[in-house]
Length: 122
Image (cartoon, rainbow, N blue to C red; front, side, top):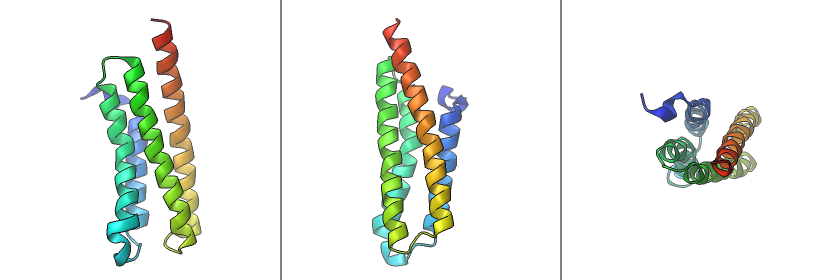
């Protein structure tokens, strides 16, 4: 088992990616190579950056990858607003996606803060 697999935030990020894949399945086919793929790539980037950061030798480097993961998460949120406005995303799916992203964002922020604080005390 890799060390990142034990992280609750990484497991939650994978669940978030599953959710994004699920809700974008209903998007119009002509959006497949635009909004659909962009949302999916950004969602996958969240867990990928958590994993990559965990392999870094310093806590500050790890925290930087968590910042990138947070940016990807925010990207999905922004695209969710557009998707809802365009009628591709239902209101219940939007609310679920938003609430999940909010929780994941708090988890990422807490882990990043913890890493930065522990890096200062070393």
